[in-house]
Image: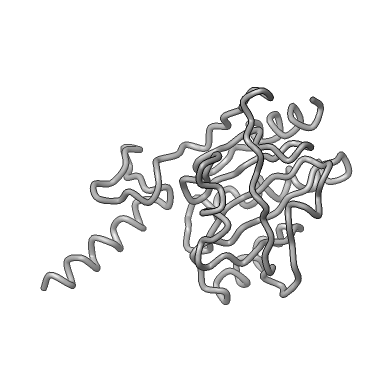
Length: 189
């Protein structure tokens, strides 16, 4: 009976929202993995920015992707999972901003977090994001950001400036205007 209660509790937490919050936006009791996020972009002053860690991994398609490959460009790093409702909701926003900024010195890179590869590939086929995603089932990429500006929710979006520093972060699903404005501001610095 206890195992069934624990399973039902975990299912309820996942159903309540991927960012670790219930309908009130407050963290669920006992769930310390993530903090609640509403998608608001937090921009960091240039003097306060911390260097992003080295990020590299195998993509869902079997290639390799890294932050280093985009040195000198602004990189939007989005942490997502196929099981996450807000991730599905923000996918068209990310796709549109990526398409509109690609020729202007901005690159997008996804990080598929704590997911089954088959489910992640199905998500990619459906959403057709137009940019690669690192398959990070164990969560090593997210852990690399500890001590800097960690992605503390699913979804989370980090914007890395041209010098490789974390310029902005959004916890939760991003909104088009907020993402486009922040990406443009960081790119035009």
